[in-house]
Image (cartoon, rainbow, N blue to C red; front, top):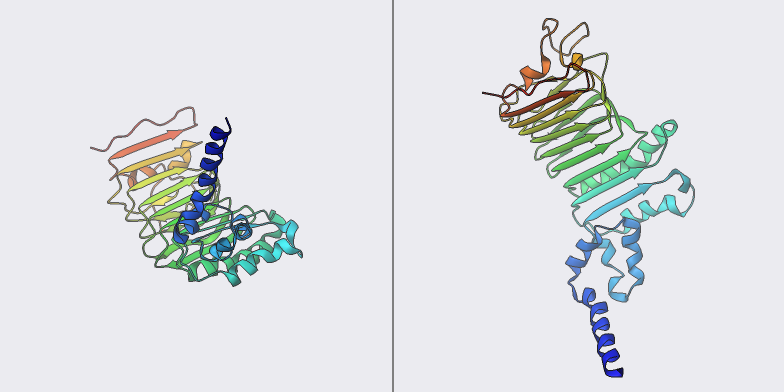
Length: 285
């Protein structure tokens, strides 16, 4: 019996040390799936772990207004100051500021974004319910962007991101045209488009497109010759047609099917609506 317990104990001890046998680069990669605060906390595990958090190729940051003026508010600044200049695979920022503190939220997030871009970030995710901004990004490394619950006015311009492949906008209020020359996969889900001016999406290299806003005018779609799959949902099908509202660079007649023109090159096309009249599947021949 004691021999059996000894064998079990020996096996457990081997399991405990197995993760410690991994190379530093792999440990840093595994730590990149942790929130940055927890990643830093691993420094207390053992002497070998003390410097590893400095080389983690990801930032997962939370901006909590309740931490203003205390240790929590200084954590990110210290993290960025002490971190090694390792290129970033991911920067994930979540802000809990309310809509009454939009300017303050942007002031805090802006240097974090600047740091991420200066360290060649490849994937960016920002969740910021209070943030209203013009967005113009420039990067030769950024490949994926996910923006959640933000509001955009003036411009949403990714033309300076030459290798950007995937753009997702979830729960965003988009009161501006979207310009993204290199993007091949675009998703707009929830939130709304402008309901007073029909905006424009210019994404000539799109392969797949999904538009599923909660409300607002379906944007004008510039030519998308490479489009393969498109899905457009709307709670009211009238927003897919021209009527008595101003459109950016458009002089089409009333009842012109804005969506069908922009998606005419798609191999697979689905239009759905919550309107009782609905839409039919429209195949491309």
